[in-house]
Amino acid sequence: MMKAATLTMTAPMLSSWAKLTELPGQLGVRAAWGAFPDELLLLTSEMASALPCEYGNACQRKIIEHGPGDLVGICVQDPALCETKPITKMERAVYRLNYGRLFDRIADGLGHGRDAKRIDESFKVWNLGNIPTVGDHALPVFFVFCATAADIDQALGRLMMSPRECFLLIVSNSRCQKPAHQETALACRSLIIALDDLLCIGPDGKLTAVAGGRATVAAWKDRVAPAPSAVGGDTKFPTPPGTEWNDITITFLSRDIIAIKCGRQPAVNWERLHISGMFTATSREKNPTDKWYMLMAFAARGPSLNMQDLMKLFRSTNWQKMRKQKSDLSKALQEFFGLSGDPLPFDRRRKLYKPALTIRQDTNTDLEDWLVDVGK
Ligand SMILES: [Zn+2]
Image (cartoon, rainbow, N blue to C red; front, side, top):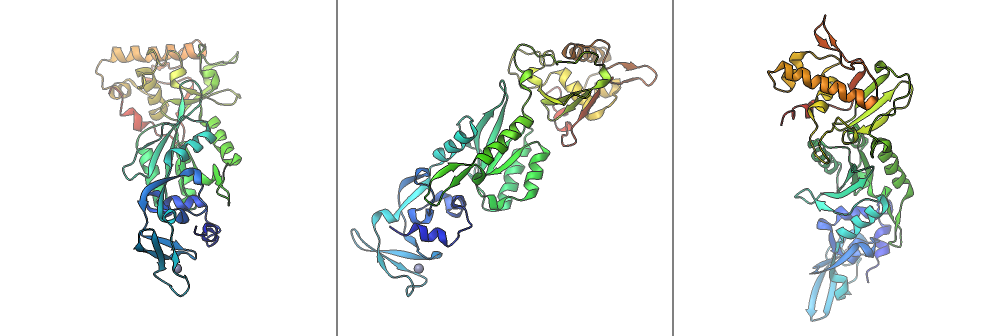
């Protein structure tokens, strides 16, 4: 066998995970994989025509077949330094990454479902399934094979194109990560983490889970997941006694998650699907109701809205129907918070609906992207 250990010593700072993009198509002879774990490799039927020399990737031995089973490798670049030597069949064998096994090991560490699928024709971006949070809410996990920072830019661009909840993006090579990537992810309450922050390859090729990475993901999950109290039969807000409408602030964090702050109490996240009355359909319908869209409109275009604003939003010419829709939303809010009095009263002098509570969107959220879907 080739001396795999010597190969890795030439680049001591580089994690073995860098092999994932160093080797085109995640294919290479065993020696080229270096200290990469055996358990993550699969033997293919392909045979290499050249092998890396012991002195690193800079030179390689071309394989010459003298007869059946009689193979020698001759260094092409520096034959004086690297002697010609016999090559075994196994040394020539090409191994490929066992994608399923790698993604399983990641899933083991994060505790999520395993239904990995490629979402990108260049095979760079994979969807690894979802981390369950509470109820039927889950956070999607993506993986990108990156050789450069631009690969991460591209993956982020792709993931942020579709309006979705937050996501976790695992990047194969921590060296490609730039602070700007994390900032971009944070803006949509998502997280980027490097593979070597989750799984570590020892010098002996052994895989170990990294506790710190797991903790980072867990903390992020707690931050973005809806409150556990929002799940189950009781889907009303635990409004403290004595609360008035003007004590309440609703902040949209995304299309489907709001943070509710009541007086001096810490804000609590709620998911739309778990707010009774806001989501009247029986179970898993994806699109928000008209009531929810109207609440979003107050957050994005408020604080106050007039009848024309509402009619324009719902592309309606029937003001009576709009008035009914507004009073439906008021009732749903009364029910959810257990408060009386109209939370969205009509200001007759200014001819505006002026909320008695604060309805806003997070500075990192732009609900306009979703408001275009009203009535679709
Ligand atoms: Zn050589």
